[in-house]
Image (tube, rainbow over all chains, first blue to last red; front, side, top):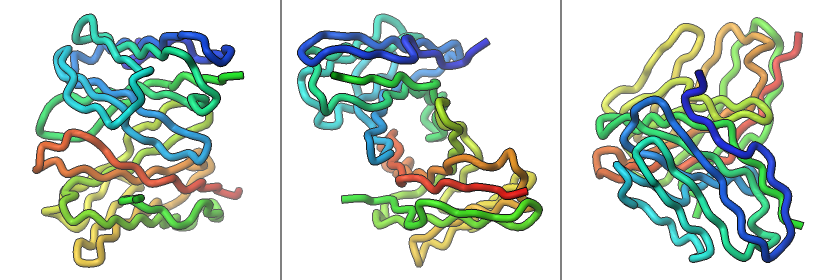
Length: 113
Length: 114
């Protein structure tokens, strides 16, 4: 049973398109995150949700809109895709407030042509 | 402004020897530190962590050392095994400040040679 899963694993699309990446966790954790790993391999936080509420938004362009329909899901919708959006996007979860240990999904490699 | 730095992009170690991976940070508010291991095409996997109230934490072959005055931490793997070949990320958090986010270094690729 995969604890944190993401779909799709690979996504290739044209500039200007709109696409979504989905994340699901079965760990029962309260907090979920989206991270972006760019071409220089830096892992940077984008968003965080706690019990379906947005708690962190790290100056990400408005074209990125996270949505959390319930505590187990955090989706990322990207409008008007640009070349610079090409990256690997990781979903992560955290069990509670007493630890910052986070558990990551396998990643979605997005390629914008 | 990179608050967590791993200055060695790669490290090569003989099997059975000790691997030492280093990490420096600049933000004195960081109070919780973690190491993650990442294989290609997979997500980072949590390895070991340390709170700022400690200077050492050990888990099997893995030991993390924290030097707060130097703002430096290191991960020791002994003995190193071929399966340890991966990219290792250092991460930090201001947990006590309620920051709830991790700041990552850029990773060190560790290769264990048989």
